[in-house]
Image 1: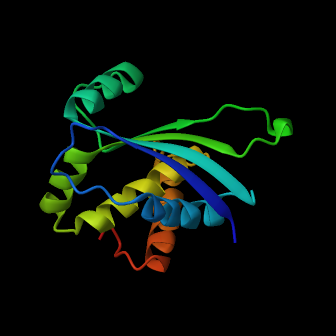
Image 2: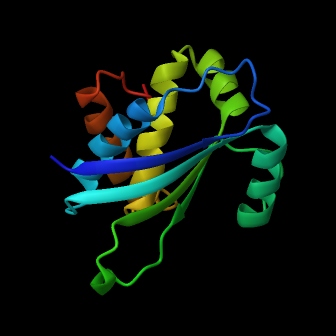
Image 3: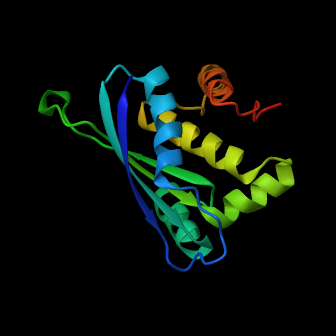
Length: 154
């Protein structure tokens, strides 16, 4: 089994938002890494932010107005260094809560989906081209099913 360590940082201003514990983030990330990467060990950081920080980061890194649910920042390290760092995820908690309600999902399932989705990006998957999107979504469905999470695209 792949070992995954998550460094979780939650914005203190998120009082009242129920953020899963680090063990859940590690479970979701481990499932994604096990399917999408051949490394035996991985490390990643997850920062959970509010709307203001989510909007600022989305504008800076994607040139888009408004917060998004998850941003992925892959580590750009030479493989020969042998450092297990995958990269960083930034998840906007209020967007997760809103989308879960809009989509009729539990918040926990939506958190899990976004972590899996973000980790797949860290492992090199993308969905900008339709063929790549089909591959990535099929992989997400398989991983999430193994975690007991319903198909998020149904």
